[in-house]
Image (cartoon, rainbow, N blue to C red; front, side, top):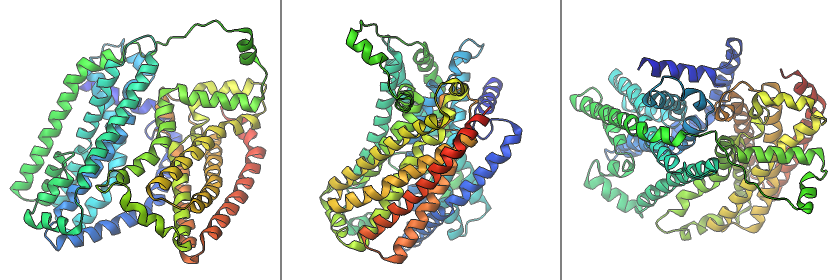
Length: 553
């Protein structure tokens, strides 16, 4: 156990996350964390207001406990889906594996340390998804000290089971895809299948919950059995019901019993991970660094095409694109997160009991100029959010690690390299926007004019996020890492574009709602303002960027 803790601390310190890096740089990370908290205040305030209103409504029928169960179940689902990405990166796509396997460490110790690292980073997800709800429930119910003690224990233990399930799913697929010479390709396919299972699991639960067709049926369910609805919303992760009852009955022997059962089952899942992981993990990770090349004879025409001269900008942009797709950690965390988000957002609509037929009313609402203006603001904010979560441009320098210094010796102007690094983020942002527009057209039957106006307004916003991202990474690159996933998922720089995106989106919503403008006016104004800002940022980047790049050491 002592070696597991020591290995966990080494993994955390060697990363470029909050605990990693030099001590003198930690104040910057603390400042960024505080700024992120400030940027999330509007969102958290809205969350608290909704939770408070739900509590008041449920209390009228004696079902306030449902709020706890719903919050815990939703948090478990979010942790499970995100945990797939974290587990694949930490357990399989980390460069430290080659150094750990020859050491006198038992598989259980390596698995335990990697599990704890994944668990620690999931606490940020729990804090955002669950923290405001639990505190709101405690304040509204006038709970005592024991409730907050139970709340702390539940907060710490809740991610265990979702992370264990995500780990086992990943291990099974990586174990049985570790065949053939193209192991990296099979591993990537296994990772994609694991993610597909997570999303499919979510779709099944959404479909089951959508069988409640109307308010009368819901009310009948609530009145017939006090805890029946709580059982419904916690069916995916039954232990979330135990946690909810432990919180609701805090201060009583019954509450202590529920809490004890919650802890026991979580510990059993943790033990199962160690036992099963001992048989699955090593066989799945053996030969992780081995690759295979395909030998083929190139014709004269193919050779000329491969060695033909092309512009430095295009060549470097293609290099960036290939790096994103050929590095599993970058592909999973940057590319696929951008492509999957539109589908994940579309999932609750697609799994409705009435299918997509009941959504046509929303498309009819967009015929109104005022509603269409608000819809355009939502589309712009969603496009910027998806681009921000991809973290492509804001990690473009960091992703190269120690190899970045090769760029200083290339016969290519620094300005060309900088612009080429923005290309993948812009392309993926626009592609995600097109996916979102297609899904909106299918699900909502949105008018073509609305889709065109929202596209015109959102594209400059995507460019804005990418320009901001590359400027941040040029000034604060994270080049010292031992795992690709630490360059993108444990990089504090990714918080800054998120804060800026939330602030800009808030301003857009404020002026759109206050101005009550038509859709064409909203799209034109937003587009023009973003274009002006983009031009200013472009000029700054071209003037200052090469100097920033030269100072990187």
